[in-house]
Length: 444
Image 1 (cartoon, rainbow, N blue to C red):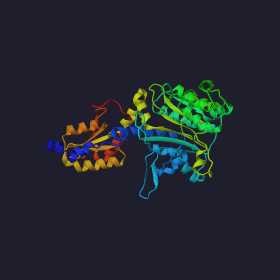
Image 2: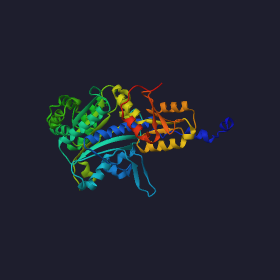
Image 3: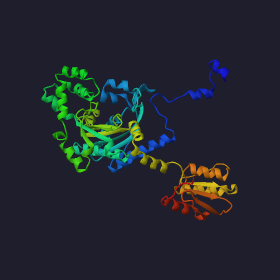
Image 4: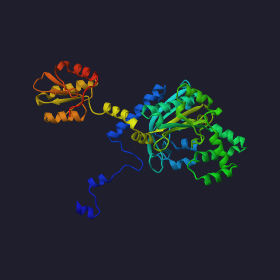
């Protein structure tokens, strides 16, 4: 092998070892997959409590779908390519354009408002860094067909309850909320031409990160000063008329305390038209955990004006959320509880006498058919090693097929109790035992 390496050749094993994931993409080993499923299940659980129904859109769409929403410059952020028929297609960077396409196509088939959610992978060709990968998974929740601020309040409430469901407490996060209309009114009061609106909102979106001198120069170019912009931001709070209905709704739910009015939140995407908000952690300085708002003109845009349907929604990504969960002690209990329930088995069939392997296998199958998570050794092993496997897999019960057959020893590995059960009554006995609350602890 050394000789091959010196000559510049590589054996197949070394070639295989050199492969890595594509930059910005992730492997999900069993433990990461289990955590991902916990996130998915939590998202689904809370969304369904709110009356949302799940949908799914294609991972691949026509590149023109994204151009229509964002312009030609969007292609620099896409994984876009031509298929074998020379059609320009892209891996989706977000789900909202697909949702608008789907909703406008069949909006007459659904009663309004349409409360839909989706969980799936998105892809952006950006430089990976903490909290940002090229492949990520998003939870999207959207309400279509209702223009009231009650819709906005419902989405803000949902985002709050999602955070709480993960064990992230009130002192750990904040909803930073604003409304693009207040800036439209501000520009009108300052007699700034409408064509400067998009550039101005881009300035506001970056105002906290950009150098003051750069911001000053950009504002002066459209006839404004940094001082008057800062003054407006400072004077905008929850008493502003634009937030009255939203404040009343969330206050009635006991949720307004989670909200902080922040006029710098405008969201970078051009299609937002009203309320906008982002979810931020308060202790670790992470990127926004979630963000969204009202986009009342997107459906009309995507349908060439044939369907003018108001809409609002938000998205939460798994990458920043995962980092936050790892840094939040209060979130660990729920994760641990979920993983303990999902991983391992409930019963382990120990074959102490190989002569009883056939009835043991029949029992394995019967227990699985009854919904019990069961495992066993595929080949003959010492009894002690089988019990060790049962412990490793966190089994509550060991079902021992030995010399007592047709009676079977059921050992409770938590309470350390043991009982002989006739094989024909075994499935019922095991399922009843597993319904009982857990007491004691596993044998070391």
